[in-house]
Image 1 (spheres, rainbow, N blue to C red):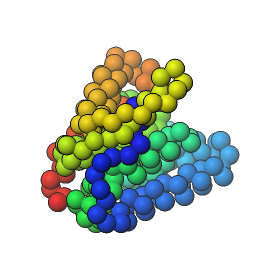
Image 2 (cartoon, rainbow, N blue to C red; image 1 turned 90 degrees about the horizontal axis):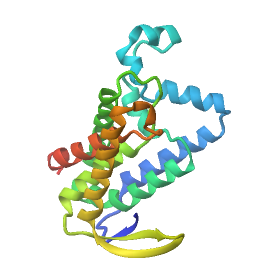
Image 3 (cartoon, rainbow, N blue to C red; image 1 turned 60 degrees about the horizontal axis):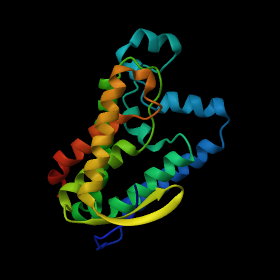
Image 4 (cartoon, helix red, strand yellow; image 1 turned 180 degrees about the vertical axis):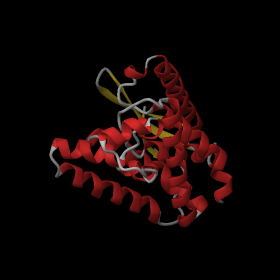
Length: 222
Protein backbone atom coordinates (compact mmCIF):
# COMPACT_ATOMS: atom_id res chain seq x y z
CA UNK A 1 0.00 0.00 0.00
CA UNK A 2 1.25 3.44 -0.91
CA UNK A 3 -0.41 6.50 0.72
CA UNK A 4 -1.79 9.12 -1.65
CA UNK A 5 -3.42 11.56 0.76
CA UNK A 6 -4.96 11.74 4.21
CA UNK A 7 -8.22 13.11 5.57
CA UNK A 8 -6.76 15.60 8.07
CA UNK A 9 -6.96 19.18 6.75
CA UNK A 10 -3.88 21.38 6.92
CA UNK A 11 -4.34 24.46 9.13
CA UNK A 12 -1.15 26.35 8.28
CA UNK A 13 1.78 26.34 5.88
CA UNK A 14 4.14 23.52 6.97
CA UNK A 15 7.33 25.56 6.72
CA UNK A 16 9.64 22.98 8.27
CA UNK A 17 8.18 20.09 6.28
CA UNK A 18 8.76 22.03 3.07
CA UNK A 19 12.26 23.04 4.21
CA UNK A 20 13.21 19.45 5.03
CA UNK A 21 12.05 18.26 1.62
CA UNK A 22 13.99 21.08 -0.04
CA UNK A 23 17.20 20.38 1.91
CA UNK A 24 17.03 16.66 1.21
CA UNK A 25 16.47 17.36 -2.49
CA UNK A 26 19.44 19.75 -2.66
CA UNK A 27 21.72 17.21 -0.95
CA UNK A 28 20.51 14.47 -3.28
CA UNK A 29 21.18 16.53 -6.40
CA UNK A 30 24.66 17.21 -5.01
CA UNK A 31 25.12 13.44 -4.73
CA UNK A 32 24.10 13.06 -8.38
CA UNK A 33 26.95 15.35 -9.42
CA UNK A 34 29.53 13.12 -7.75
CA UNK A 35 31.22 10.11 -9.35
CA UNK A 36 30.33 6.73 -7.79
CA UNK A 37 33.45 6.65 -5.60
CA UNK A 38 32.64 10.19 -4.42
CA UNK A 39 29.15 9.13 -3.33
CA UNK A 40 30.65 6.15 -1.51
CA UNK A 41 33.10 8.41 0.32
CA UNK A 42 30.28 10.82 1.18
CA UNK A 43 28.19 8.01 2.66
CA UNK A 44 31.07 6.64 4.71
CA UNK A 45 32.01 10.06 6.01
CA UNK A 46 28.53 11.41 6.79
CA UNK A 47 26.48 8.22 7.17
CA UNK A 48 26.27 6.06 10.27
CA UNK A 49 28.87 3.27 10.13
CA UNK A 50 28.34 1.26 13.35
CA UNK A 51 31.85 -0.23 13.43
CA UNK A 52 33.23 3.30 13.38
CA UNK A 53 32.08 3.63 16.98
CA UNK A 54 32.20 0.04 18.23
CA UNK A 55 35.61 -0.81 16.74
CA UNK A 56 37.74 2.33 17.08
CA UNK A 57 40.95 0.52 16.09
CA UNK A 58 39.39 -0.48 12.77
CA UNK A 59 38.03 3.04 12.30
CA UNK A 60 41.47 4.54 12.87
CA UNK A 61 43.05 2.00 10.51
CA UNK A 62 40.75 2.88 7.60
CA UNK A 63 41.09 6.60 8.27
CA UNK A 64 37.81 7.73 9.83
CA UNK A 65 37.98 11.07 11.70
CA UNK A 66 38.24 10.52 15.44
CA UNK A 67 35.12 12.50 16.38
CA UNK A 68 32.19 11.42 14.22
CA UNK A 69 29.17 11.81 16.47
CA UNK A 70 27.76 14.46 14.15
CA UNK A 71 26.90 11.69 11.69
CA UNK A 72 23.84 10.95 13.85
CA UNK A 73 22.39 14.09 12.24
CA UNK A 74 24.03 14.17 8.82
CA UNK A 75 23.00 10.64 7.84
CA UNK A 76 19.38 11.81 7.88
CA UNK A 77 19.92 13.98 4.78
CA UNK A 78 21.60 11.42 2.51
CA UNK A 79 19.77 9.03 0.19
CA UNK A 80 20.86 6.04 -1.83
CA UNK A 81 18.82 6.57 -4.99
CA UNK A 82 15.74 8.03 -6.63
CA UNK A 83 13.28 5.53 -5.15
CA UNK A 84 14.78 6.04 -1.70
CA UNK A 85 14.37 9.81 -1.65
CA UNK A 86 11.03 9.92 -3.49
CA UNK A 87 9.41 7.42 -1.11
CA UNK A 88 10.77 9.23 1.94
CA UNK A 89 9.89 12.74 0.84
CA UNK A 90 6.41 11.73 -0.33
CA UNK A 91 5.71 10.11 3.04
CA UNK A 92 6.97 13.23 4.82
CA UNK A 93 4.73 15.36 2.58
CA UNK A 94 1.64 13.27 3.43
CA UNK A 95 2.12 13.02 7.20
CA UNK A 96 4.51 15.81 8.19
CA UNK A 97 2.21 18.79 7.66
CA UNK A 98 -0.37 17.64 10.20
CA UNK A 99 2.21 16.73 12.84
CA UNK A 100 3.89 20.11 12.30
CA UNK A 101 0.47 21.76 12.66
CA UNK A 102 0.01 20.11 16.04
CA UNK A 103 3.53 20.80 17.36
CA UNK A 104 4.45 24.10 15.78
CA UNK A 105 7.34 24.53 13.37
CA UNK A 106 10.27 24.91 15.79
CA UNK A 107 9.24 22.02 18.04
CA UNK A 108 8.55 19.86 14.99
CA UNK A 109 12.04 20.50 13.62
CA UNK A 110 13.61 19.45 16.93
CA UNK A 111 11.30 16.44 17.20
CA UNK A 112 12.21 15.32 13.67
CA UNK A 113 15.95 15.44 14.33
CA UNK A 114 15.61 13.76 17.73
CA UNK A 115 13.62 10.86 16.27
CA UNK A 116 16.11 10.53 13.43
CA UNK A 117 18.97 10.43 15.93
CA UNK A 118 17.28 7.77 18.06
CA UNK A 119 16.56 5.80 14.91
CA UNK A 120 20.23 5.90 13.95
CA UNK A 121 21.31 4.80 17.43
CA UNK A 122 18.82 1.94 17.32
CA UNK A 123 20.29 0.71 14.06
CA UNK A 124 23.81 1.02 15.49
CA UNK A 125 22.92 -0.96 18.61
CA UNK A 126 21.18 -3.76 16.70
CA UNK A 127 23.96 -4.18 14.13
CA UNK A 128 27.06 -2.91 15.94
CA UNK A 129 29.66 -4.70 13.82
CA UNK A 130 28.46 -3.44 10.45
CA UNK A 131 31.03 -1.65 8.32
CA UNK A 132 28.38 -0.40 5.89
CA UNK A 133 26.92 3.11 6.12
CA UNK A 134 23.27 3.69 6.95
CA UNK A 135 21.75 6.75 5.28
CA UNK A 136 18.30 8.22 4.79
CA UNK A 137 15.51 10.21 6.37
CA UNK A 138 13.28 7.20 6.94
CA UNK A 139 14.12 6.89 10.65
CA UNK A 140 13.14 10.50 11.30
CA UNK A 141 10.04 10.11 9.13
CA UNK A 142 9.14 6.96 11.06
CA UNK A 143 9.06 9.20 14.13
CA UNK A 144 6.61 11.46 12.29
CA UNK A 145 4.46 8.41 11.54
CA UNK A 146 4.48 7.42 15.20
CA UNK A 147 3.39 10.92 16.19
CA UNK A 148 0.68 10.93 13.52
CA UNK A 149 -0.71 7.69 14.94
CA UNK A 150 -0.93 9.24 18.40
CA UNK A 151 -2.33 12.60 17.28
CA UNK A 152 -4.78 11.46 14.59
CA UNK A 153 -5.98 7.92 15.41
CA UNK A 154 -9.28 8.40 13.54
CA UNK A 155 -7.72 9.76 10.32
CA UNK A 156 -8.23 7.94 7.05
CA UNK A 157 -5.93 7.46 4.09
CA UNK A 158 -6.38 7.01 0.38
CA UNK A 159 -3.85 4.35 -0.59
CA UNK A 160 -2.68 2.92 -3.88
CA UNK A 161 -2.67 -0.86 -3.99
CA UNK A 162 -1.42 -2.42 -7.24
CA UNK A 163 -2.98 -5.76 -8.17
CA UNK A 164 -1.46 -7.57 -11.15
CA UNK A 165 0.11 -4.29 -12.27
CA UNK A 166 -3.26 -2.49 -12.19
CA UNK A 167 -3.61 0.42 -9.74
CA UNK A 168 -6.51 0.28 -7.30
CA UNK A 169 -7.34 2.97 -4.77
CA UNK A 170 -8.80 2.26 -1.36
CA UNK A 171 -9.73 4.29 1.70
CA UNK A 172 -8.37 2.73 4.88
CA UNK A 173 -8.04 3.84 8.51
CA UNK A 174 -4.67 5.48 9.08
CA UNK A 175 -4.21 3.37 12.20
CA UNK A 176 -4.46 0.19 10.10
CA UNK A 177 -1.84 1.40 7.63
CA UNK A 178 0.56 2.63 10.32
CA UNK A 179 0.28 -0.42 12.58
CA UNK A 180 0.77 -2.71 9.58
CA UNK A 181 3.78 -0.64 8.49
CA UNK A 182 5.29 -0.91 11.97
CA UNK A 183 4.89 -4.68 12.30
CA UNK A 184 6.29 -5.30 8.82
CA UNK A 185 9.41 -3.40 9.88
CA UNK A 186 9.53 -5.12 13.28
CA UNK A 187 9.22 -8.58 11.72
CA UNK A 188 11.79 -7.79 9.02
CA UNK A 189 14.19 -6.33 11.59
CA UNK A 190 13.84 -9.38 13.82
CA UNK A 191 14.51 -11.68 10.87
CA UNK A 192 17.55 -9.61 9.93
CA UNK A 193 19.07 -10.14 13.39
CA UNK A 194 19.50 -13.82 12.53
CA UNK A 195 21.44 -12.92 9.41
CA UNK A 196 22.56 -9.28 9.19
CA UNK A 197 24.05 -9.93 5.76
CA UNK A 198 20.49 -10.46 4.49
CA UNK A 199 19.19 -7.04 5.54
CA UNK A 200 19.04 -6.03 1.89
CA UNK A 201 20.17 -2.46 2.44
CA UNK A 202 17.17 -1.48 4.56
CA UNK A 203 17.72 -0.24 8.11
CA UNK A 204 14.67 -1.94 9.60
CA UNK A 205 15.58 -1.19 13.20
CA UNK A 206 16.05 2.49 12.44
CA UNK A 207 12.42 2.49 11.30
CA UNK A 208 11.31 0.68 14.45
CA UNK A 209 13.32 2.95 16.75
CA UNK A 210 12.11 6.08 15.01
CA UNK A 211 8.46 5.01 15.12
CA UNK A 212 8.50 4.05 18.80
CA UNK A 213 10.37 7.21 19.79
CA UNK A 214 7.84 9.27 17.83
CA UNK A 215 4.96 7.66 19.70
CA UNK A 216 6.59 8.09 23.10
CA UNK A 217 7.99 11.60 22.67
CA UNK A 218 5.37 13.38 20.59
CA UNK A 219 3.37 14.68 23.56
CA UNK A 220 6.48 16.41 24.90
CA UNK A 221 6.59 18.62 21.81
CA UNK A 222 3.05 19.98 21.95
